[in-house]
Length: 444
Image 1: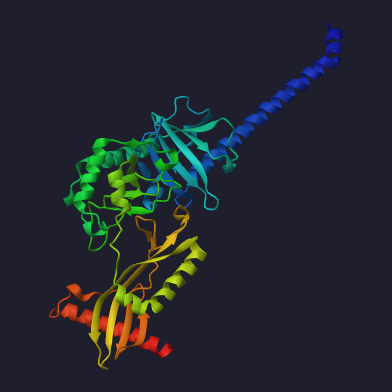
Image 2: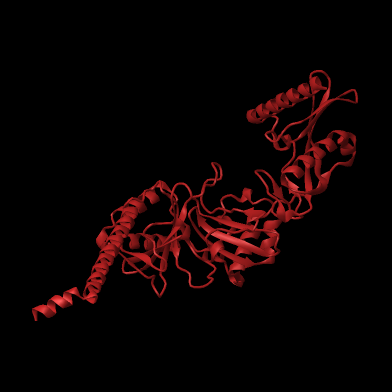
């Protein structure tokens, strides 16, 4: 028996078995150590999320189809990001584990762009009962990520915070409800609606809500991201002080459209909480697209007299804009009307004209517009004017002329010759115009 035992120990199969057992043990220990390291790395990442490392965070109800309305809650403020970070930092190792994602989807989603340099997306999917799981952008390169698996977290506090923020915003904001109930007297900034009357706009919104011609929003559009160029926009507000200016926290509509006829996007809410729909409505589309149109008025005789000064200004704008924004086929004078004249101390006469023109883009869909530029309903580009045109004449001859610039506008038609404020404004306008004409005369 002793000899058999000795022979067995000497048998190669025995040592092969021992080697396999040892290797398996080493592998198991290595896996355990590797998993422990990954657990620690994930926990460290969660507990070290800071307000500064969150570049963007948005929460929303999970969409199972192309629902047209979806509230996106933006956690862009420092307070919101600090609150999120503090909740993340309180998560403990007993509340985390790695497992496949939920088979039944989720109820709410928190979309985080994390990292100060090249931020990567992190999705926190809220399931139920305080359970959530993380999924990471493939480019995140987190050491604790495994293909096909996700990290689960149990945190009733975090789940409740995300859910309640979305639910509360949804109860405050509903674009269709707001459209169906709006009245012209609700708009506090009617003067900002261009040539659209508050009554016509309110009527169009109510009719659009009733007809229910909604179009599905894509996932990107639901998140406020789109490649569509919205060339025309109205922002009728139902809160705020138009004297001091409407701000993002005031409840308002945002109605906009592009070159695709009859398609309108309507949002309602406030900064960080908009409910958005896209619909097909010819009447509303025409109101928005034509909102900045004005009647073309050009006095032929004065224009003919001064066109040798006006045409070079338009050609200059055409040349510089073509280089910067695209290709244009020409320009069109849309307004040249005298708004004021006065006799100066030297016996000369000074005249002030409104002077406006538009450039004609060959491919308006490719335009990239900057501040102050806009398209009229004919897709003509405005906002490149050099301001009002002033000219000094003496004994029938032109002495000097000047373009007053976009920071100057004066029209005394509604001004009083008695009220001190109007008198002071007239005096200041004369001083500005005379100064510009004197410089022009000296340069000539």
